[in-house]
Amino acid sequence: MKLLEKNKSIEDETIKFVFELNGQIIEFNYIDNKTGKDIICVPCQTMCNMSCKFCHLTDNIGKIPLKNLTNHEIVEGIQYVIDDLNIGIGLRPLLISYMGCGEPLANIGPVIDSMIMLDNEYDNIRFGLATMLPKANTFEMFELAKRVKDSKLNLKVHLSLHFSNDKIRKEWMPSALDIKSSISALEFYGNYTGNPIEVHYTLMDGVNDTDDDMYFLELNININTTIKFMRYSKREALIGVEKVHKDRLEDMMSYLESTGMIVEYYEPPGQSIGASCGEFSINKYELIK
Image (cartoon, rainbow, N blue to C red; front, side, top):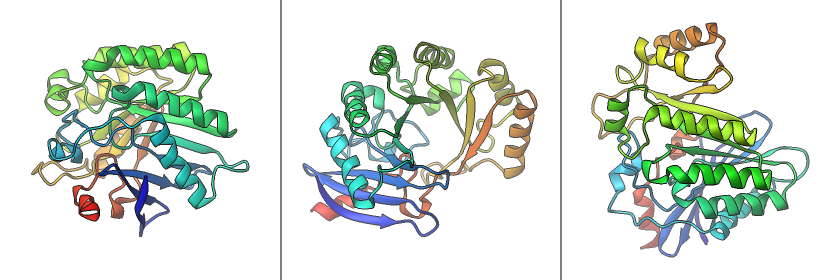
């Protein structure tokens, strides 16, 4: 793995590390969001073929080969960031977030193996993993739960839900399992492992921010499960699709909080360097030609 670029965001402490691996681009992001921990956002694949309509990677299906990263390749990139920034030591927590390029459940073995390798090496470490729960990888969710429990890993699973209506979700996330089965699988993971769980919901104006969407979340998400609303990172190919208006976001959050639910809002860091999920830049391939 060879470092090609190290880009620092102009608006926050995010740093993107761009590597070349066997003729492909691999990106790791360091994030310090002022919460007292060091975060490394890592990929599990060189590409993603889940075809989510709002994802920037969807534009590159067929252009970038998809390869599962090995556990050693994942750890090598993480270790490079740790050594370069001199983190992972002392009392400051280290969070390894499997929310970069790719779908973790589609490469579940190496993903868990990399966690175990890191857990054995660092004392103050925990993990996060975001999954859309693909229809083709339903069994892997249960494999994940068993191996996490057996290995006593501190892994928080985030369900990329984003919609409350199956018909609309299928249009936007064609590879995803149906909504209620996805929520049930997430709750099973939390109950079985005792680890925290979270629901991610990217709000888009007029698409998934209706009163019906809000009431669905109230009725179907466990009151102890955090709902994290996220900023939509505009994809130019989707003409007319915009992030939710601030007033509407505040109304939805206020209502759900009034019911006792745990609600957060997250602005993805590193916007100037394309560090949001799916903002993998195909022009990086020019660096290795």
